[in-house]
Length: 237
Image (cartoon, rainbow, N blue to C red; front, side, top):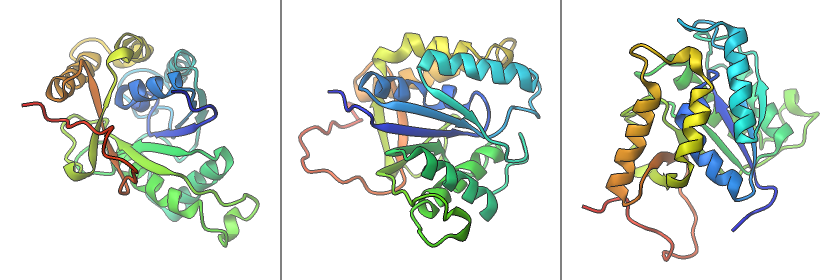
């Protein structure tokens, strides 16, 4: 069932994080009528491959395939993202401007790219700050309260608390997801088998859950439901 005008705002630290981490979920939600906005907080300046110009073009091509709006933020660049009150207020201002129903961000766990950790934590801070009406820096924008914050994993085997995890069936999005990931050609080739890694990861989660492919998300807060009927177990063995 479509939910017209439902807005989903997704933060990524680098130009390919969203595409590799949660693009099939966004593609499925777009089919259901959601409006997608992608906010990338660097241009991959510190990456081993691809110039910032190339990586920006790749992100633009991927966003076009996803039928999503794309925004870039300047938070001091790749490998320089820091969890500061100032940066959190920048993200909160974006939330107030975009007025999303749902926000997605990288998991804020340690032992991964430090930009992912910092951005996930700042997005959590920003979702809270966005609803406070007395912040002097944001008084020119009306407060906004989101429905839910979800985290996605960019790094395989992310140790985020399993109790908050749920799996999203993305079986029907696999072909388009591959095309979206292929947009980031500068990050592929050689031993960088990122697409195969993400597809294998999704296939394993799907096999464990009784579908063809799945992406695991993590809820920042408890989910409120009115019925247990639509819930399926992610364990079939």
